[in-house]
Every structure is written in structure tokens, then in C-alpha cells.
Image 1: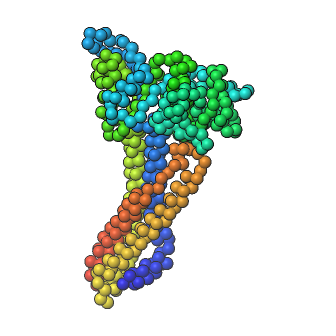
Image 2 (image 1 turned 90 degrees about the horizontal axis):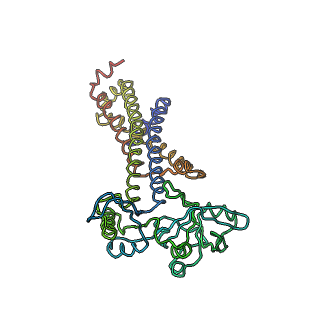
Image 3 (image 1 turned 90 degrees about the vertical axis):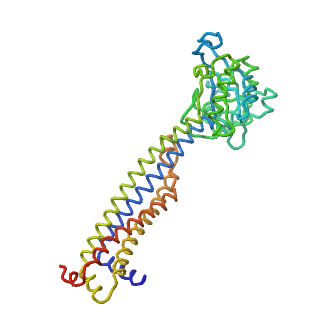
Length: 414
């Protein structure tokens, strides 16, 4: 039976080349619209989330603020100045905390290598800073370690653009750079990364030294902020609440006084980014879905016209003993084959477009967002399933209508 259906389909295809081509073209375009819109939407989501996480991965930046409530007889308007020792208290009283680091910061730090001079933002931190801020070393270098911290070594980790500005195309690792007229050894250069959020400028132009070295040179007792990362992202709200409670007890402020501490919640920032981009993805999916629906309506209309044109042929088949199921199967088979053929062509074309887009050079932030599409095979399979349903519906209803007419009436049809 399948050979008969296939033979009849090929015969009809040859007889109605233009109609079949237009039908397949509509299905192909609908498939491309759905798959590519969602592929670029998924790429946009992943790039946006990565850009936010590259500013701080699952962590809180905690700043000292100013109390806005009277607490235990103390007036409001008191300054809260955080110190490095607060991290020991946080580790002890909040076991759900995984990584911590202070951040001592200084704008206008002078850097000099030979005739190359510049100024930048310098930061004194712990080794855990690398994971929390995703400042990973490029090949051949390293980030700060515990020995650098304990020995108060004069070592520096440079952002990529800062390293290029100072050393050009030469490898900076192992070379000496002057920081505020003091010699430091470059131990690593940061890998290039997309960063859509930042504090005190992009990490690409930042110099990082051990917190202990920073304190020794500049004598700071107060930190710019503390970095805290929970062990489990699900515990982030609890850890955030405990930070207010633990530091509130130490500095004598109401734990519900949100102005006493400034808190940059990178965990919530990532969730907010995901929600925004999800809305964009839904919009793109709806647009693509309507395009596919229009294509399906086109297939249904064409199959209806085909059924009308072949009414006499159907009457002859019924008159010589063909069953209604054979008539219906023929139309359903043709509609399914057209839909799935067009869908397959659309999927292949979409895959080629995605592969080509991912090979384009990423020279700017805009290109990072626009040339990172991700082809989702589950979405592709769902699209194929929708196409099969469209083909089934497009073939069944006109075929049942045509097969339901008596042979006599079919033969009299003009």
C-alpha cells in the first residue's frame, strides 16, 4: 500500500510542481522562522546570563552603609565601616557560606613599564576572588594563591587590556611592572570575558594584588566591600538575611535596616536577567509559531483545493471498489510528506545558519549577543511534531469530505 501511495504522490508532484513547491516553501519558511528565532533567543539568554555572571558568580557584594533606624538607644545616621576581620565572623556564624574575600580598592594607581605608563583601578583581594569574579588566568599564568597572601608578595594579576596597554604583544608573565613606584612581578593575565555588569570599571582594565600586600603598602583598615558566596544557590536568600543579622549584631544596627548595608545581589541579578530574556524568547517563539501556523493554513487550503480537483478521480476509485480509508490515507500521506519534507529542509538550513553565525568573529559586545545562537534539538523535534500534526489535519479533513461523497455525485462533479 505504501508503494502505491508513494507512486501516486510522485505522480501528483510531477503534475503540480508549482503548487507542491509553494507548499513546501511555506512549511520550510515557517520552520526556519521558529527554529532560528528560538536559536537566537537561546543564544541571547545564555550570553546575557554569562555577561552578568562574569561580574560576580552567585555571590553578594556587601558594602558598609548608613543606619536609617534607631537601635538599642543608638541614633540613626551612623556609618557602618566594614573591615577584613568581618569575614572571620561571617565564616564562623554562617556555615552556609562557601567563599569569601575582602576588596581593598584604589583608583588612580600608577603603572609603568619602560616608556609605557597608565593609571587604573587596583584591588587587593584573596585567592577566592578569582572564582567569584570569574577572573581566570590565561594559559601560562596564574592567579593569586595562599602563599602570595601569607608572604605579602609583590605580585600582580592584570586584566587583558591593561596588559596589552603596558606590554603590547609581549608576554607579561614573569616581567616587572611598577605600581605606584614599587616593583611588582606579573604572575598572570586574565582571560578575555564578556562583562555586562561591573563595579569600578571593567575587569579587563584592573590590577589585582594580594589583600595582605595592599594593607602593608597603603595601611588601610577598612575594606571597600566584602565578597560572599553561598555554598548552595538555593540558600542565597537565607545567607543574605543572616549577613544582616550577623553584621547587625557586630555593628549594632537593626537587621531589618537595609540601608545599614549596601548589597549587590548578583544571585538575584542573574535571575532577573533570565526572566527578562525568557520574556523575549516567548515573544520570539510566538512570532515563529504564528508564522508556522500560517504555513499550516496554506497546506490545508492547498489540500482542500487538491481534493476538489480530484473529486472525479476519487469517484472512479470508489466506483471500482476503493475503500474510504485508502482515499483518506492517500491525502494524509501526501500532506504529511509535504510537511515533513519542508520541515527537514528548514531544519537543515537553520542548522547551517547557526553554524555559520557561530563562526563569525566576535569583535564587539553587540556581536557577542548576535552571533551566539544555540540550536535546540528538542525545539527542532517539537517543530517537526507540530508539522506532522499540521500535515495530518491538513490531509484528513478534506480527504474525509471527498471520500464521503457518493461515487455517483463524484462522477458528476465538474
